[in-house]
Image (tube, rainbow, N blue to C red; front, side, top):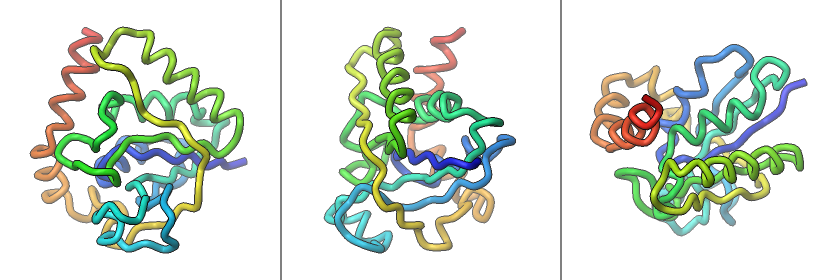
Length: 176
């Protein structure tokens, strides 16, 4: 039986590829959630007035790829100490968050956040929000699978964002 997981981690272009490469992941859709405006456009979300965050909605088979593994991937894509955006993308629509679809996801998300907080990996508090899933609105078609459709633009944007440098320092070097 398939389930959904929803994560906001700044620019949704950078949040698709990390999840989109595993058996058990049926789809990763870029979109918007958490706001008050039905069917928002990219421009409305980017303005910061819709209340929505850029997010990805993942359809997955928990028997093949458990939710705990999705959480592990999520944490390693973001700066969980920054609630004002992510990397070069600043503002309310780029805040990181976990949107839980049921109580089991909430329990697992809270436990994973607590484990990260207690790990000592970050000098600042882990402040990524965990909240109930809300309606998810798929982004415009040109945003879907952006890393596949526009590999050069994706690579350039990612290189300029500062995301990879942060992730390398927070995860790879710390684990060495």
